[in-house]
Length: 216
Image 1: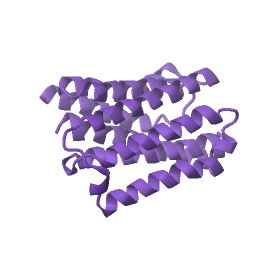
Image 2 (image 1 turned 135 degrees about the vertical axis):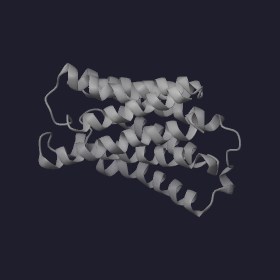
Image 3 (image 1 turned 60 degrees about the vertical axis):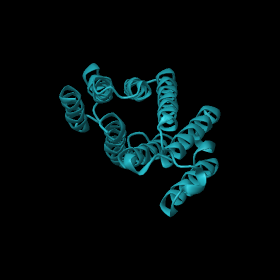
C-alpha cells in the first residue's frame, strides 16, 4: 500500500506542476506533464489492488488527457471517446460495489444530486448541443454517459463518500470544459480562466475516486 500512496502522491505533485503549463504552446513536454498524473493514478490503483475497472478508467483518463493536449479533430474525438469509456468503467465499478443503495432509499441530498444531474443533462439541449459544431451526436452520447456515471455514484454506500465527491467534481469539470470548448473564444481571458479551473477540479475528482475505492 505504501508504494501505491507514493505513486498517487507523485501523480498529484505532477498535476500541480502542470497547472503552470496550462496555457503554454503545444509541446511534447506539456503533453507528458498532462498525461502523467492520471497514468500514475492508474498505476497506484493497480498497486493498491483496486478493482480493475478503476485502473482502466484512470488509464483511459490519461489517454484522454494526452489526446486533448494535441490539436486536431481526430485527437479531440479520441479524447472524447477515452473519457466516455472512463465514465463507463467507473459506472461498472460503482454498480459492482456491495451495499449499494436502492433508488427508494436515497436521502434528500442524494435526491437533490440526482435532480441536478437530470436537469444538467436536459439543459444541454439548449446551451451546448446547438454549439457543438457538427459533433452533436457524440457530445449528446457523452452527456448521457456522464449522467449515468453520476447516478451510479449517488447510489454508493456512505463509506464511499470520497468517491461520490470525486465523481461530482469530475462532472463539474466536464461541464466547465464543455463551456470553454464550445461557448468561449479559444484564446480569450475567460477561456484561460476556465482552463485554470477545469484542471484542478478534474484531477482532484479523479484522485478522490481513486482514494475512495483504491485506498478504502
